[in-house]
Image (cartoon, rainbow, N blue to C red; front, side, top):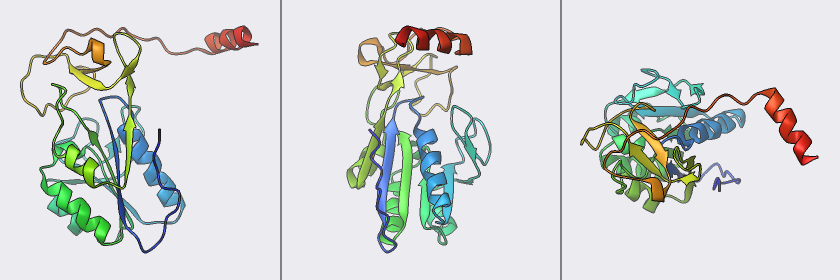
Length: 213
């Protein structure tokens, strides 16, 4: 369910959090909301932690390679300084900030800004990933997204680490993580279970449509 406010008063600020596991489309949803705000004529700034340089040093990039220009910051406090002129502030990969991000988000919202935050709600052990639980608690709107389990094909809520590493923060991609359903989740690490999925062809689509006729 996408829980996004449809009424946007000019004088009020609030916090929206988009959470979920790896590969659930959190950044994709953040970018979608940012673009809609831009189309509506609102000033938008997107920031991300400097730690996240998987795809780009500055751009915000989803796993599907959807991109928007953004700013990188080393600390949460820098966000306030860089977004003073913005009406909409988008913060990606919020779990990589320390707990100061909670006060920063409140400050921005109290200043009349729409604050959109995306981040992992659980770490590789399936435990709440601070500071996301606090951000979820103070948000007016929360959206929980799910991926597809690499093993069972069911709804995936967990991020399975598939490399041996005990650091809570391990910035990685498909080489290090797989989405898993609860009954397929084996913390702290498991072997890779996902299969290579071939691209969907037009022939397959035509065949499916004929079966449904």
